[in-house]
Every structure is written in C-alpha cells, then in structure tokens.
Image 1 (cartoon, protein in one colour):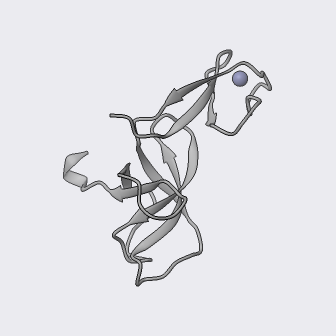
Image 2 (cartoon, rainbow, N blue to C red):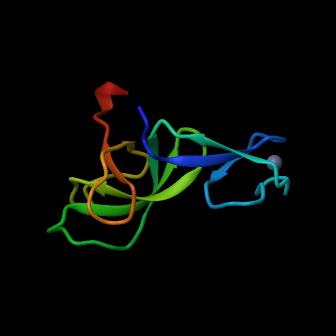
Length: 108
Ligand SMILES: [Zn+2]
C-alpha cells in the first residue's frame, strides 16, 4: 500500500531521516536515497494542541523505518493515549498533517 509517507536514508551509513533533509544527520553525507514508509510507528511525544471536540491529537511519531514526523492522531481524546502506543497511517484527513490512528494491541 502506498502510504504517501516518504523518507530518506543515507547510502553510506543507512541512517534514516525525514524527507526534507539534504544531509545525513549522522555522517553529513549528501548522498540520500528516498523511500516509502509502511506507515506503522509509535508515539514519541505529544504536541500541545488540540480540541477535544475534534478528537485529534498532534504528536511526534517515530515510524518503523526509524525516522520521525509530526502527525495527527485521529479519533482520540487528548490525554487518553499513552506514549509508545502503536499507530498506523490512515487515509488523508482534513488538515495538513499526515493522519494516523491507533493500532489495537492484539493486532500487533
Ligand atoms: Zn550517513
């Protein structure tokens, strides 16, 4: 499935980084390759936001490929989710941040 999430990785040291980077954050090489993410990841940090009415929480998500991005977690009440919870990419939702939903624990 094409999740629409792109990232880059260093051809020299394989360090993953976000798609906006031009230099490897680990070794400084400018030889970065682009790849697509599977869209699975975990919550690393919550960002201040949010209206309970919209049931969305902005957070920093670390993708399984090892890079992080800012995403909107949908269908949750702020404060009702814990750090480290598994999420996956979902279809685009209104707003400019990539949208994610929680993955039920039994399906991981
Ligand atoms: Zn590197």
